[in-house]
Image 1 (spheres, one colour):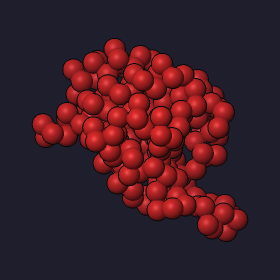
Image 2 (cartoon, helix red, strand yellow):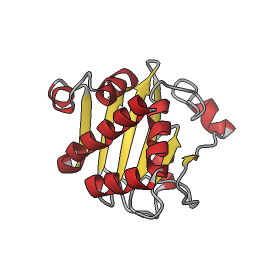
Image 3 (cartoon, rainbow, N blue to C red):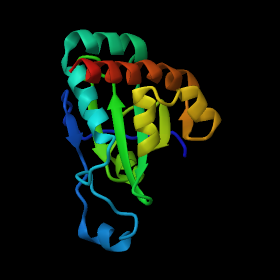
Image 4 (cartoon, rainbow, N blue to C red):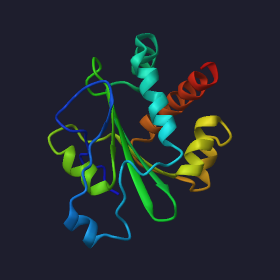
Length: 173
């Protein structure tokens, strides 16, 4: 996968934006691979919690110091043939946002006018949950091909702090 532009809709808020609307032709042509952002995967709770973390200004400031003004794309695979794409966009530090897409194509199209993502991480739903809980280290996941990284490895390593902050926030809730 090339690090192509991938972004949320024109609406820029500090909220999760489900940006995909499936059109009938796309669903008919891609019936085996089509999925809906409303089709839940277990990782959805992580991104929802991350949104809660971003809504807390202290936590948001800490994350921005760690990650910087970058956009990161997570490609989560689940239920054998489904894909959900999440983009965490810190490019506007005042209003970072999280967007969800039902395909790589839709994510790429929606981000065409914005800065391209700095890194694309592809991981299964199960392994993403293990990464966030600390049951799987980022280094081991990468070494054993449980996660693939396309783009800046430096940015990818900084995301370890992002995952740790989500885990810490969930445990304190």
